[in-house]
Image (cartoon, rainbow, N blue to C red; front, side, top):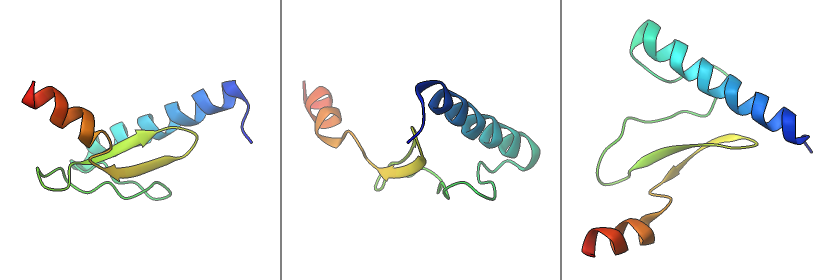
Length: 70
């Protein structure tokens, strides 16, 4: 189990690795991190930066539909 401060450091490392990979090669994927597919309206792949970095497809679907149908 990670301590609170360690979680923040881990999230920061994940984001920095993604940013560096994107700026170097135009792709956010980096060895050692979950593969983040390109976004499309059907899957809505979203990277969740948490204790572990993971991709979820349309993680807030119900909320998004509720707000968009307003």
